[in-house]
Length: 193
Image 1 (cartoon, rainbow, N blue to C red):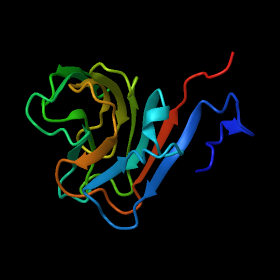
Image 2 (tube, helix red, strand yellow):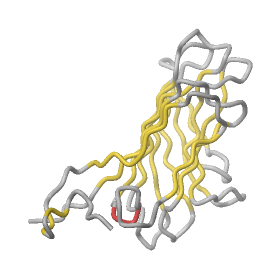
Image 3 (cartoon, one colour):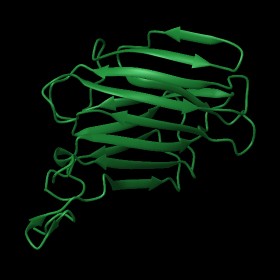
């Protein structure tokens, strides 16, 4: 097994804080994008990171203007698996609500009926992913190009004490279209003085 990039000739070095783990640029539509920890001590092994960050640019092929996009952590999809609070605004008014307890990080992305070639953008930040406490994450997202021009902030908690080993990005209906891009980064702890 090769040493990770932050071990040089057997010596622990202070590496870049963010490590690119995976990237997907869809060539065909997909309803879900999934990343799973490799559990092998290499770059794709989630156990070495403090946090995980997802950056995505997406659009749905569903008819109409908008559909939802959200996260499942560790295949958790049952009622009561998540808790959260969301805040959305359209430039003139703000709405707060309590999202579904079967998913986290809900936001709306443009559909086939939205302005042509408009993609929504979203950043998910998963905190302290290997701790023995519930897993919290923040969503920052924005979309334009239709009737629901919104910016979103969502605080979510996945009610599991297990480490995060899988992240599923899911459309509520339809598929993420070809050209949608998804990047996963691991945030390393500071390892040297």
